[in-house]
Amino acid sequence: MATKTDTKEKVNLKDLTKTELQEFCDDLGLQSFRSDQIFQWLYQKGVHSFEEMTNLSKDLRNQLAEVAKVPTIEHVRQQESKDGTIKFLFKLQGEEEHKVESVLIPDFYDDGAANRLTVCVSSQVGCVFGCSFCATGKMGFFRSLTHGEIVDQVQYIDELCEKKFGKGITNIVYMGMGEPLHNYSAIVNSASIITDELSINLSPKRITVSTVGLTKQIKQLADERQPFNLAISLHAANDEKRDEIMPINNSMNLEKLEEAVKYYYGKLHRPITYEYLLFDEFNDTPEDARQLADIVQWVPSKVNIIMYNDVAGVALKGAREDRLDAFMQELVKRDITATVRRSRGDDIDAGCGQLAIKDGQEKGK
Ligand code: SF4
Image (cartoon, rainbow, N blue to C red):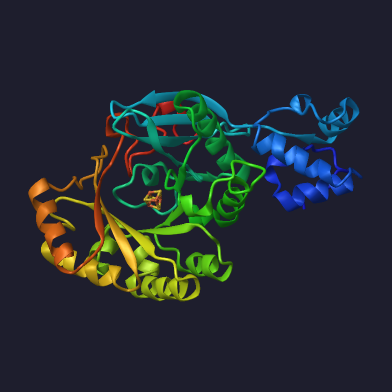
């Protein structure tokens, strides 16, 4: 385990879970409360050096600096949409200088005060799954993020929200670059840190993890009784169309997904959310809606119908309003709980399916 202190390489404390941090402190012979103090400095106060941990003695700070480090991802720039959505570009640790994007989607009350402040975080640089409509999928795959790099995105944006809106973030969705359940332990560990009372202390009910349908990991979430919400990116309601736009469906088809979803619900009794991007004249017919209704009824669930933002180089286009209306009517007839989501931040390429590092120089780096 990375907690050995007798190697020359400094231990990255942000690569450790809370339990591993405790073990690291035990190895150093520190009093037991020191681990919680360090955890709080890292994840509640968001410091970037041992020097700033002022309730630790100078000697202890020096001792820690000799054997450990607390690096952070670097904010490169941000862009604000006319609808208030903000897209962030972060540079990760490591010589490769990989970059990822995160998005803040604020909702406001009528008086202009901030209501929900939702952060969409990235979990991988690129993605292996290659969904045909997704800009991230077109980048290829470079590496998965560590749980510390995921928490860093949340922490940076949480601090910005405190300054800009007078309150911290309220919700997190793991729906940025990458397939979250393909980086399972980092997702679970980051969510565990974010929900810790010595950290941001966000309720797990306000965290949603999305997946294209990795059935083994869906069952693992159920077996481990992970407390956050599950969303499944469906985007087509029969195998023929899903095969065409989501290669994952070739190995994990709707029958296997149904089995995993029923397993998950059987253990946790927690409703599932399906995400369904509506593409013009591809998956937006009344028959598609009827097939979608059948899927949504596998277990108690709801569905978000998302208006797709066009992505350069993708033939699929967003559905037209008249076809959306007919589609929704079919769902309503079948008593399906469905919400239409207008994807936000499309003018800055921050909408669903649009995240990718585009600048030639930065591509994949
Ligand atoms: Fe990967 Fe998700 Fe994009 Fe598919 S939609 S390519 S799983 S990031």
